[in-house]
Length: 247
Image 1 (tube, helix red, strand yellow):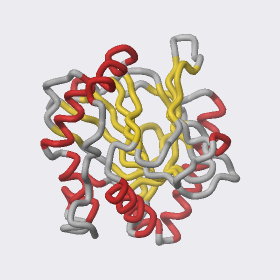
Image 2 (cartoon, helix red, strand yellow):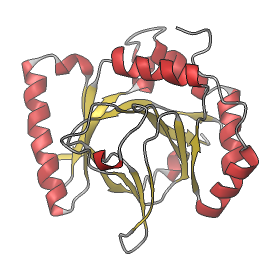
Image 3 (tube, one colour):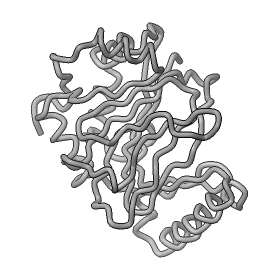
């Protein structure tokens, strides 16, 4: 492990990024970390992360977020449950109901429940909550009252997706959503996994490719989704995601 797991790129033009965010309520910050630390985080996600699953299938028996923990994925019962809920997400999405499925390592939950004390994931979450990153987010978004962030590691593998939704948990202090991308170096557009934004008519008004070492910031609530990852895509749509909060 490098001496510093999370080091911001000192060359970022924060004023220009702030102008773009003010105009659009969202921005993609490219090369937001130094190359060395971004590569190390990708290595942690690819090689040292025990993945579980996060799924939801509205209009079925699986309303609300469903979680299969990493330890349960190793058991036959957990695998059967994953298959059952996975099929329900297909049926739900086909009806136009809200649904999602993707691989997940819930970093904040793991920290609170003591899954792996002192793990690189815990150290990463500490860096995300450190003054340097919180201040970067404040400067770009203009939201001076941001004080902390939660976080999860995610992997959108083949045939996984996140349906259109708005993240309306304003009462819980959610203000800015963030997505830190650590994909392979040249993620092809045909592979999917894009962060998409929609207008009131359901048209896509902007899409962010999951570029390696990019940071997406956007104000919530607003309609967005992660597009379906193609069956022929390589494994590698790794990210760290969460919400920057005021409480």
